[in-house]
Amino acid sequence: MDAVLIVDDEPAIREIFTVYLEMGGYKSLTATGGMECLELLKTQKPDIILLDLMMEPMDGLETLLAIRHYPPSSQIPVIIITGKQPTPEDILQYGGLIENFIVKPVDFKMIAESFHRIIEKNRELGREIDRIKNGEQDPELLSEYTRLLRLVRVAHNLKKRLKDRQWADRIPLKKLEERLQWLHKKLGFTDRLLQRDEGE
Amino acid sequence: MEERAKENERTIRVLANAIPDAIMLLDHNRQIIALNDAMARRFGYNYTREHGNSAIQLDRNGMFTSMESRIRELLHSGRPVHFEEKNQDEWLEISFILIPGSEGQNPRFFVQYHDITDHKRFEEQLKKEGITQIEQNMEQFQILNDQIRNPLQAIMGYVNLDCFQYRERIMDQIMMIDSLVDRLDRGWVESVKVRRFLLRHYRDNTDDVPDPMSGAKDGGRS
Image (tube, rainbow over all chains, first blue to last red; front, side):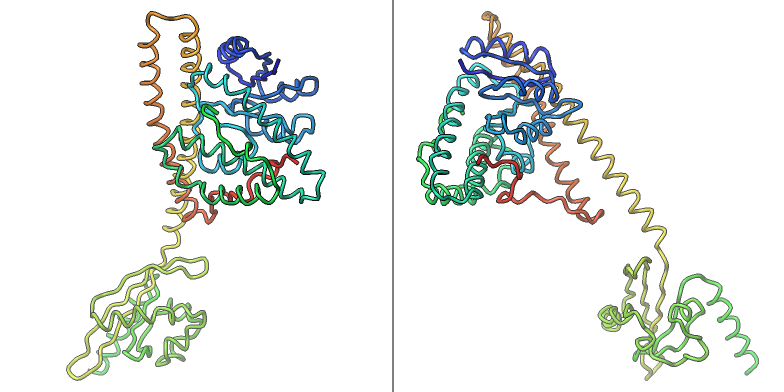
């Protein structure tokens, strides 16, 4: 059973997400803030983390960086789910560290259904990286690839959902995709990594 | 007659030196015909000794020389020219006024430097306070929007769980509130642009969109 860690300071959000996750066949873990999340990661290894942004005293972005810095959690997929509308700066700066950026309110049942696919894709990416690492590929290129893979996916999802947003034009998606495609071919990854599923 | 002329000159000199602005009268070749003490101090020369010298030659920091295009504009159009110029730490409002020559004579022009440094500093202070206020408003916008969307998310979740009779209507209401918050978001995006503009032009601190090809450094998986 895949485990999902919900990090949100709102008790009602934790409660309702827990209900939906358990209905969707996940084991749910909860943390009321960034510090508690990091503490929990010392003993637990969830398969995916749902992270709120506007929290005190440690906000979601600080928590995200800490998750990425801590080796046991550095590869766990993170989804930001928040009431704060992202800016292009947010996406460009943090989009490469997350799997998705979701703005509340959302039909959580639908979102939860996508977690299995995200978890599976992340595992596949891990396997592919392990396979490629056996060759003599430049680690910098691998790092850039994984960052761009996430960034392009996040930017695509947001662009699709927020069609009228003024920031959409300020993310050079075409340029990013071209670079991603180039790296993809150069590193010889499976094309499945580039496929985008509905509801992701 | 000569005594009266001298008396007139003394009167004009007293008046010219009584004002804090630096002023001078130049002929069309930029030769100084007259200047007050404030202008002499600005040039760093004694007025009496340098009388008749070229203003351009005395212009050791190049500021006056850089105004040559404005002088040509004045001589061409005949209309007074007013503009602001920053010279190291001071701001000046500079005026060039053409004085037509009498019959057969070339025109002369009057130059006035009015120090507006205090005014400019005050203006910049106001702009900085304006930026601070915008930043505070933006922060409040963000917190409020997040706080409104949290209960919306919770209501949506509970309704979808076990409210069948009125679910559609409640969802419609949730979407209406969300679209109102969306409008606030768009206003916030606008205010981000205003803030970026203010920072770029008034705080000398650019706040550009980061380079997507560099990104956050901790994004690498490998």
